[in-house]
Image 1 (cartoon, rainbow, N blue to C red):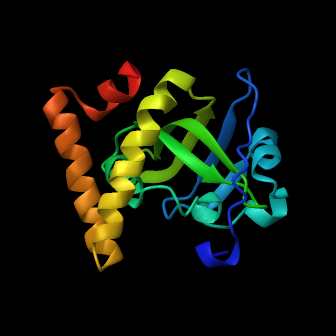
Image 2 (cartoon, one colour):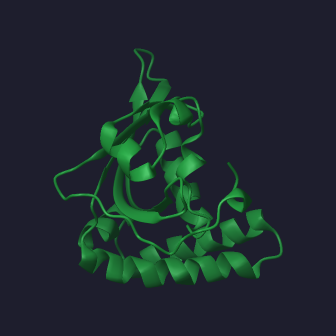
Length: 174
């Protein structure tokens, strides 16, 4: 399902603070496991999700540069925490605070990724949403999507560097 096949509804879904959205993917990002909370909030059934790219829930209003940072980090074998705005099957959106980790085999090769998503704090979203709007505007100014993503990525890294802390420290400081 590409971005053009589904319009956004403008409705924000929520899940309970004691619920955790869990998914696992293969190294290429194809879903191999989704829990019931993932199924409920996404609006898909399990059979529609398994084998599909995790991007099936990508919100077209979500900054590509944040996903670049995420994939670069986990592809390098490190964990990452990030705020992500996802899209459900019907076009509703839902915010998550994601923790994504690589899974390694006995030869220290990445064989899968695991993600737990929790309800983000409203105070964190009040900081993240304007930042993400700024990054989306930077991405949109470029005539090419890849150039825009890279410009947004550079801007994100510059913002973090100016704060004098790591990206993860910034995410937890919110």
